[in-house]
Length: 409
Image (cartoon, rainbow, N blue to C red; front, side, top):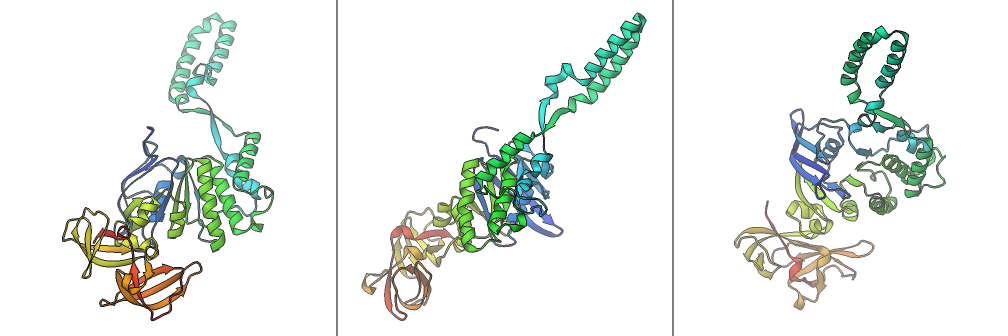
């Protein structure tokens, strides 16, 4: 694989279950050492995409390329991936140590390739012994030896070129690798505890440790935090991100939770109805959504119909506002996005928009204020740290760069 080549590529990947098509010609590139989130609502195709990458589902059309090699038809165990499932799939009869070590105890690694032992193969040893015995016993046995040698050459040609000498991982190496990941996931002191006696977060760590101890290039996580309570889920978000940085493994994480994706991901892939809507960093997805669907799905939003006047001006209803430069053609109908946290409540005479407070809700660190705008009676939401009494007449202020202009789709 080249230095800047993607680690994983999907080319025109589609998937159908019977008459229902769940993926529509997906094209996707994932680089090495990235934390990638597949984000979308239930039924959007994110888990199917993950399963195709892992080899648990075969695409109906298209190719899966891994490290420059077409792996479309390869089963999961022949791909350099490991998976953490939603239910963790731990062995209840094994303790933490043995759960983590289970795969290592079964794994066999290449000891030396056939090319390196060509002259010392078992056939060579057998032939040398046979030659010595036969010629010593009877000098007339040389033609017989040549006949056997032809047989050995034939057998060697068809059998041994496909063989590798393999060995099991030593107990010492297993111990070192298991203890290393136990320390990495903060489970020191729990090695010999039964997994049934662990908390949800601890079981999650065991499942992750078992997956990374094999040193895969890619770790697949299918909504792995969904069973945890809110506080623990937030803690695990930071732990997963730190773990990904420490190991250098590419993480592909499936979630419907926007906050999880924004917190952890280097790259977010927003999906809808089996198609990719937008790919970008958390900042790009949140601050520059490509369309109304992405804007609504990522965070709170105020969306209004508008029209482009020129590269720096738009109409919102009958009001002309300045905005950051847009490349959309003048006269085009667009959607205008204003994030609640970008808006300020001010005195009516200072506001760009005017309205009356309809409702106010306490959200812990801020108040969510709903304002009905004058004339249009549109509802706009503002996040503020100040309590604004219902029925108060207010102005709403914002900066030019706070207006995000999107083509209607």
